[in-house]
Length: 266
Image (cartoon, rainbow, N blue to C red; front, side, top):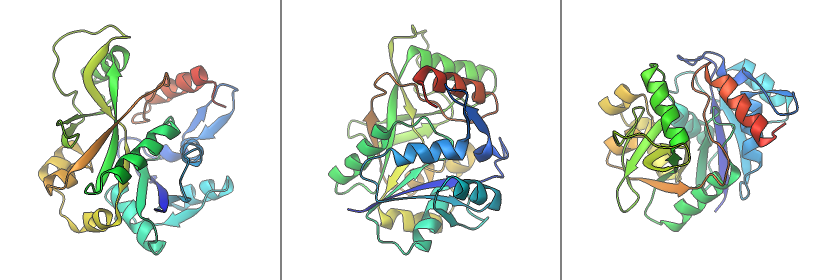
């Protein structure tokens, strides 16, 4: 089952314009762009047959090709990363059984998150879409709550049923707990990791569906699948001591750089 990893990246982000080219300093003092660090993360995934950057911006294209990435140009009309991955897959002529959307703002994504996601989709023959979820410890949850109190989106949370099929995703912190947690305590809140694995049929259908009210309100592309009553499989992954965070706001840059330093990442 050939696997394609596509890294969608756009320059004109509403919340953070130019985000893919933002420089992040690692433990050794070396500075690398966000798109470079996302590419490096993708290249560590075992079992991927091809990795491409999917963008509509020549600045990102030039930067990515400068460090050796393969780039697929997509249109400016793509509403989100899933639509951009669909265009890239089509431009490549298909030929893959699983397409992974490794979003370009999550350079700390451990390779086993993606590997376990691929295996999760493979092992569920009826699943068309899968995405990882990570149980929050108190430190992560308290960070989410602090961000929301400050009016920032700190990440996306997910709730799912016993069959691991998603019930909802939100930029609010769900489920409501109403109690404090110590930094090292286990919590009932799951952080949605912004990575997706699709079967070609689901990815091809996605751009043809209208944007629904939930997707519009939350600004979360995966809600389009739920609004079309297409199940999304949640694959629980473990951090194994690694911290995970996405670059959503300019304020996240020092947080990610601290994590890179703690990991010893270059």
